[in-house]
View 1 (cartoon, rainbow, N blue to C red):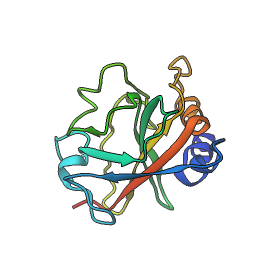
View 2 (tube, rainbow, N blue to C red):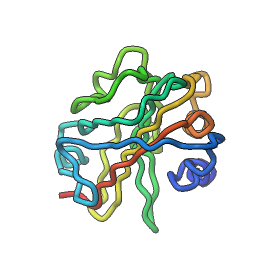
View 3 (spheres, helix red, strand yellow):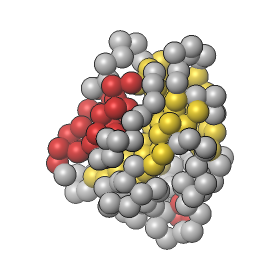
View 4 (tube, helix red, strand yellow):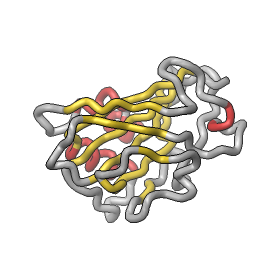
Length: 169
């Protein structure tokens, strides 16, 4: 498990990308605000599933797909709550509860808990990072382990952006 977080923690996860220049993605949501609490509807206290997300960046001709990783990291607890990948590169938003109805052709990894899809955060003191990645290729789902999929995302990242919720309302 520690190896997964050594690779997957967003700070070191992003740092392992082989891309030379990482373009910036602007990430927003009609339900989330940077540095504000995650609405409880999108936590384990609610029933809304994954929150809606929107993103934009400069056009990238080499973009082949989008991946989203939701993780948390505190001194006492680290977890990956959602990994969705192979989202078509032309997609610029996902609606609420997209984990239950993902875009055609996309896949979702089993997260830290072993569950596939969105695992709602529960720690009211946690920091929850919704990171969007533009990739130069597609993820091969044969590498079904969480660490294998996260490594593929890191190796193919050409742009990234993040929206961080702090705590739960």
